[in-house]
Image: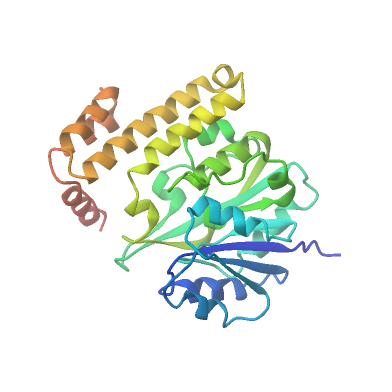
Length: 308
């Protein structure tokens, strides 16, 4: 008999009428047949509700009376999930048709696997720009117990992640409702501490990077939330620094770099250089330090031109 567990697809949406129909249709186009959609409308004021309700009963629609933080909204949706496996798709992303058919069998007969993810295509508002997530990071994750690897190179695109419902049930906290942008990072780091992981080395989905995305609008929150997750992990595991001290130090360097980029993006080059200066003479920090005398938008424009 074919291994066809139900996949509950969690979709959270706030005023997503511009993109949400394409996202939903990409689930209906899956070649894997056994799925349901948990659609949590976070008190949208546009046409999101009308679009979501135009689909059949495989989409279960829920709506908040008021907008809540994204982590809280994700938890609300998860409480409605009935599947043995759980996947995630935000309203501005789309899946490729074989995504579930490729990933679901990787759970078969492997109870130690709590998460399976894959590469994703990054699309930008400029239609000429398309990149692979793994290629952009110049890193491909290992399989198995990848927690230490994630501390050094975090590479879990949420839109390709599928988790085992049993893993969710064993977590003392799901998504942290106090986070603004790194709720997924916090969630998957904690999950991967206890579970083994597999991944698919091909693009399974397409992610749109645009100026209205929360990670762009709320970039200031990213570094501090990552730092909070690191402290949460230390507090939860008494031997954390003994086992993962070197990898945690690498994550701290990454957090400092992201903080510098965030300050630079806000136009505070002087504060950004103070952050970059903490890790001289590392090439990455030195290059950012020198470049930060110019506007970040200019550097990004030049980088894009050179890439083409």
